[in-house]
Image 1 (cartoon, protein in one colour):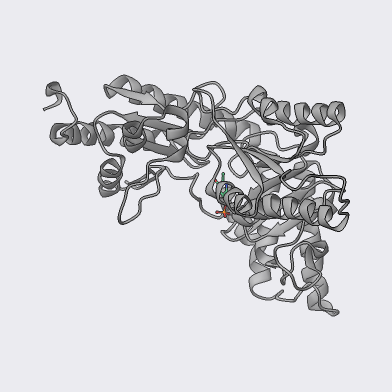
Image 2 (cartoon, helix red, strand yellow):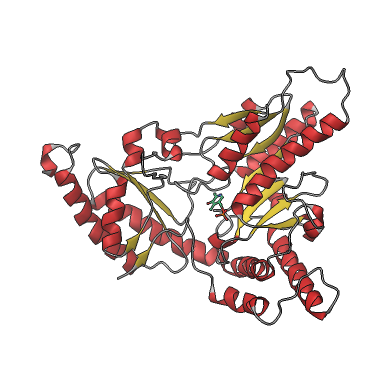
Length: 408
Ligand SMILES: *Cc1c(COP(=O)(O)O)cnc(C)c1O
């Protein structure tokens, strides 16, 4: 049996999506900027996809920018927005306005994806001050923590919607509303970005409801191909492009459009709109069955992250006394794909920055495994996984120098 439980890493292209994008890889190969029939067909396809994305997010088509994926959208949101503020400030330089050491300030969290964390680190090198908020014990970034971090020179808050490792769901709407209130009361101009890559499939994605100014989604996490993403940029928000060239994407992202993949991501969100609620409950039931059986049938295991505000597809468990990498290799031998949520380099095992941020426990970070369900996951697959996990954990604990006597 083959069991894929790594949907947060990526998933298959949905059949309907592949069918929809196929003509643009074969017969309808025009460049959307061209002034002929082929070009017009491609232009229409891109425009139609933009309308579908806008509908999905309750936005205006002019607020949708297609990118090469979640990583580019995150980079463009963070660096493009902050650089635009800095540039504007330099242009309007009024010597009396700001003292030299008054840097711009950005607020994010310690549990963000590296696309956000490393974009923020880059900003720090050019003098921008960044606050990395610590999550609570459930792995959630609390509204009050964001509020307390706001300063007079804060220009951007970026908090992810759903964490990709432990599935914690952050209170994006409450944070968005709080920021609006602070902006009004204190005459600030803080913008709010959310990385919603892991949220798109199961959460409310209405940008109006969420009170966000910038929002990221990625194609390959929702049934479209790898290498395509979206950045929602609210009307009136300026961002500095990272790609300079032609006038594509309203001058905000140059380069010939990835027409087939743009068509695909539009179709993927259209499918999501139709399916969301039923699928959500089905997957949540399988998730709870899975978590319940692991915690009950394998001793000394703990769930990472809370149960209440948790993505319906995420199971992340700490297995005491064993190394996550050994569990993964053994699972792989019996055809089960999961993830350790820790980036493993050849020289050092980097423990998961997310589990470290929540639990400050390196042993826990090294002994944790993430299973993420998809729309094709079944209870039979979970049964197969549990049976194998029980054997693997018992075997590894037998040989682990960390285990107490009863496991030997
Ligand atoms: C996968 C992922 C990304 C990166 O998206 P790509 O399209 O793979 O570049 C960013 N943020 C989160 C939360 C993700 O899970």
